[in-house]
Image 1 (cartoon, rainbow, N blue to C red):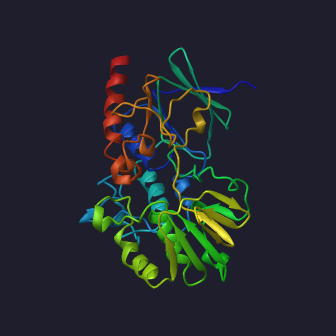
Image 2: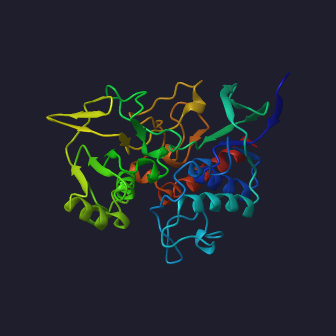
Image 3: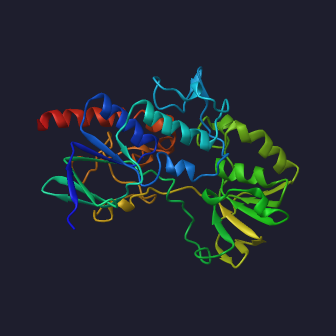
Length: 340
């Protein structure tokens, strides 16, 4: 059965914060667009631990979480100053409704090709969308990263912090947390009353109060984490790079730790799986090579937004990439006008 073909000016893949911000601007500029989301709006955020604390404030006097001043998150009934992951996901859904965005939920882009300068996106609904311009905002949350160390892959003792949900699962167990960022700190702190917690990192921990870099461990965790480490409630060791894992034993240079669960809080990599038919050049973190406004250096009119438009760790933060999306959309509007 032939696919139903729909012509658009712009296709946006991804219904997360970056994709929704691009959709809002497209809506305001009267662009004929469609946004494809394989789950619900904000699905990647719904897949996180429900009560995970956001690290950007949600207050009238300091708002680094809202996607638009016309519809700020702090007008909703959310926890302040930092809301929870599920509250942010709900905000994204309400944002979509408020601006009446053209988001197709439960419609996954299963293949993308370029034919005679036109991007062709086929979906699981049997629809084929054609457009001269394509935006990919598939982010990073769906692509958790565990270092490629011997013994880690397919090891039942190993998991990524992305899948951490309930500390009760680890009651009276020995847990090793690997990482030096906010996720590692949050998981380790959450476990201390239930588990014997070890924490290791390749380098020393870095804290926002000392560096002013928002992706370093934030004040909401800093003092508590330092106290737990000082009291040896969390047994922390710096300069411990994982060399190998043998069943439930993690091996370092001159040391090893036996644990019932090994949780890697080692971040994410760019999620470009939707572009498997393209020969996208990427860096070691799987971010595409792009221009200053997010356009692929290889494929004209292919744009990346959100964390995929990577220019440093700040690109992974909501208020960081929200500065980039309007610039990308400004260029796209000009290109569409030039196309007539």
